[in-house]
Image (cartoon, rainbow, N blue to C red; front, top):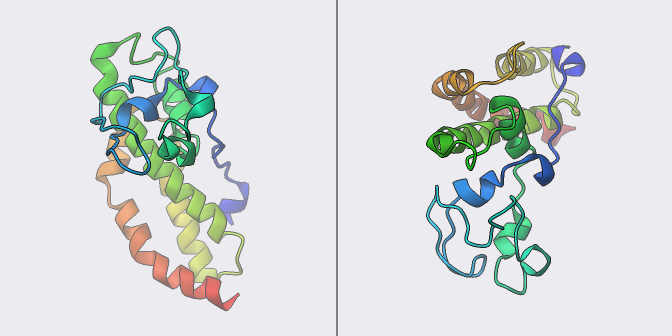
Length: 178
């Protein structure tokens, strides 16, 4: 089975290796989870100007940012920063911020799907289901040279995510029988 030998990325967020992509890419709506509105593509005003750290990180809940505490990029942020952009940040190359945000969105989608596949592999699937899961995994495996903006864009434009989503009910029924 391909899934047992293929390497999955680390789904653990490592903010020290990221350029605070979540603090730039995502929008906030003022409410229970966020103390103010912030449009997507705009750096959070709580970001330290000389680093990618949050100036209020130790007090996020008390300051009205429970949404930040709950958010987990599943490792997509550092992967985009380190792999796709080779450590270059949106502060280093402001003209590439839009590409970085798009890559972050696509990598999050990829990681969410890969994480679902990793979870499904823990269950006793039928041989056809295992083959189907392996086929999805093969389509979602990083190119030998690693992910690039172009390869992520091509993956995002493909129908693999829609096909995986359409196949989920059959996988769920197999999981519920386990």
